[in-house]
Structure formats: structure tokens, C-alpha cells
Image (tube, rainbow, N blue to C red):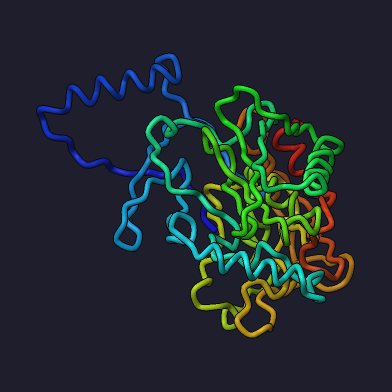
Length: 354
């Protein structure tokens, strides 16, 4: 999937309204940034890191309707990200998954019709949100809960929070008066989240009967909150996995797009078959046959040639070095038990400078 800062050419205002609009725009930007227009675009899949430059909001026409998107352009996924969904149908699929004896071989977030199954950017008015970053300041994520959850449900959520606290610098803290925060809901609409800090109130949905079954599913959605996308959409994924588009449901082909190399970075991390952000072999399959297969075999496989590894420095430049093209494959694509070792490294490198 391509994650791009929105670049647009706004339509020209009527001459009589130009001065008024310019004054209003100046007041808004000064109110938020003390007179300096600054934007920080940040998303990772393992991800995208772009600092500097001005990000413009953009109106897209999807299905005959106009949508306001955020600092990142997800419009190639169409109404899967921005539009309405049959949430009741998604909820029933996830509930049926939780009752299935084969649930351990599937991932509930792959059952949604949202972008890539579980990425959902609700339709809102941008206005004052247009210059916000998508990285949580100092790694602190204020949260609140809706009232659907039982005590047992909350214990599972707190356990996932604790995993972040034990292994990374990320802290999920109860919201007091913070403007930007996450509300965790348990509605019967599947497992989904926006990507990164959107500004203001944003929702993560973890359906009670399905999305709380494995701690890794909770961690998966919370990593979306932090800005991480799916491993199989890395721009270099074709070196590591085969995509069998003939087995993909026709309306979900966009779920297997790749990110743009110019807008994303792997943070110098090798491809992670065991990531909690990797989808399963049969994700979005129309016939039960594999949609994803690894290109390497064995516990440690070497790929031809040498790899150029791009590592982000604190000065937002890339240090390039060459290393062996080796990658571990343990026989499984993705898992929902919890973090992989590389998942932890990614978070710590991006947020914790370690």
C-alpha cells in the first residue's frame, strides 16, 4: 500500500474572497503553530518517516462523494478506507470466526471489508487537523474505553498495554484532558483502527467476541495506532513473498498493494515473516487457497547478492550500508501470540531511539 503525504492544487477562490480567506488561513496556522507552518508526516509499515514540508489536505471524489482525507493519501483503497460498511455482516463473520475450531489458523482482522481488512479512517472534517503529525508525542497514548467491555475484557486490554510498557517506551495512559486520544470500543463491527495519531478523538474497535481472543490481535491494532502498517505491503515485499492474485477476492485486490519506496522506509529492518503485523497465507482468499507464500525456505535463507539497508538517523537523513541478504523464516506467515522480536525493535527504533 502506498502511504503518501497529500499533494494537491487547490481551486482558485473568487477574487473578492481571496484576502478574507488568506487572513483566516493565517490565523488558523498561527493559532496552532505560533506563526510557523510545520508538518511532520510519519507512518511506518514498518513504515514511513518524512520530516519537514507542508502537508495539504485534499478532497477526493470516491463513488460520487467527496471525502476529506488526512495527512496521508489512502484514496487508492477507495471507500474501503473512507466509506460506509456493512458492519453487522463484518461483526457476524468475526463472531463466527471466534466460534470456529479453526480460528487459530486465521486472523479476525482479515475478515473486514475495511482498507486491507482493518484500516479505517472515519469520514470527518479536517479543518484544524490538517497540520497535525501522526506520531504520538513522547510515545504517550491517552486512552478511554467505551462501556461495552466486561472486567475480563479490560484485563486483556491492560495485559496488551503492559506488553508495550515492558518491551518499549510506549505508554498507554488514561485520558484526562488531552485533546488527542484513543477510544477503544467493542462494537460488533470487527477489528479496525486508523493509522497513527489523527488528531482529536479517534476510535479503535476490538469486537468483544473475536478481537480479544488473541493478545496479538489487540497488539496488532494498537500498532496501527502507533503508525505501523502491514508487513506484506512493504515496498520490497516482492523479494520475500509471492502474491497469488488469482486467489484473491476481486473486490479486495487493493489489499495487496505495495508502499512507495520514496515515501516509506524499512528502518533498516529485514522482512519479518513472524511479525504480528503480517497477514496469514490465506488472507482475503476467495477459494481457500494461499494468497501469500514465502520465497525462502528453511530457518535461515540467503538471497542473492547484497542488500542496501537504509537506516534513519536522528537528523532525518538516511545512512546507507551494505549487508548480507539473509532472513529468517520459521515456517509460519504472521502470528497473533504477540510481538515478534523485530516488532519490538521497530517500535524502539522509531519511538525510543534504541
